[in-house]
Length: 181
Length: 189
Image 1 (cartoon, rainbow over the protein chains, first blue to last red):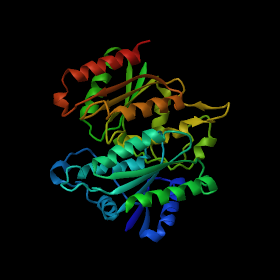
Image 2 (cartoon, rainbow over the protein chains, first blue to last red):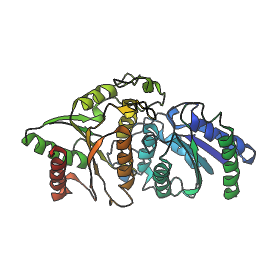
Image 3 (cartoon, rainbow over the protein chains, first blue to last red):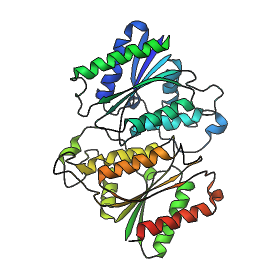
Image 4 (spheres, each protein chain N blue to C red):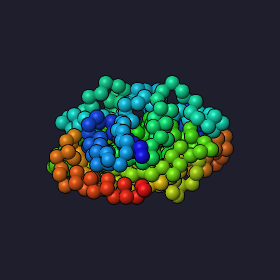
């Protein structure tokens, strides 16, 4: 089984990275795991050209979108970690989300039957709005949501120093793996 | 009054731009000033979450050297701001979202008695156009705007959604009705 952990945070080694990696570590014995950050890929803004409706792929070809989409396609289980920025995913993650519209009409939905767990980090609130946006998006593309976890953190090392939330993450990892097989 | 209009669409002549332009024309006809900024014409990268700005109180404290701070200064100097965006995957376009995220640097002292925002009391409005319905589609963006407004201490005067858009030519009366309502709410007392 391939488990892909994707962090949508612009902040390297921030709380969403830590949370996503913690889950991957816990799932290490269940298969091959890989951690990636959307911000490490070059993803242009969607320009609303609409050419993808005919092409069934994005007309912008000189960036890393296809590479990133392929990573998602190859995974059996996706762990999607993201911080809440103004009650919705950060701009850098929204770029990827917007560009997936290019495969909206693809005969095989890119995340068809893909099992996805959401890991959401916020300083204070906004979990429900963000998770609703991400859930609606992922369902559009055929994904199956198998769980979500809400974590509180603000400063860069908040989460890594919080033993109870790290324990909660490990427990969550065990729960989701139970739903995969 | 002087109103800043922020176009978050990548399409210069799309549905959002069309409704926004009608609003702007009506405002100018009434003697108001309009300062339009098309986000796609500027370099605005996303917020890095570095938190440096939290230490800067009387000006936008972002350390990033792109066009965002200059745009914020224009917004701060105006009487009202319209944030206009097509709905992309239940939210702002990513280019608009990057701009919205960067507004984090306009708030300082959250949770302390010094809590304030450089946009405190600013008359703001949201304009959204979308291909689908409002319900279950353009709901999250309005809620997010409302709650960001509380945090930014805005005076939100209205949230406007034009649903079931196809092409600008097919907008029909919906465009003018929305623009007129916006003028009344934003320029009215």
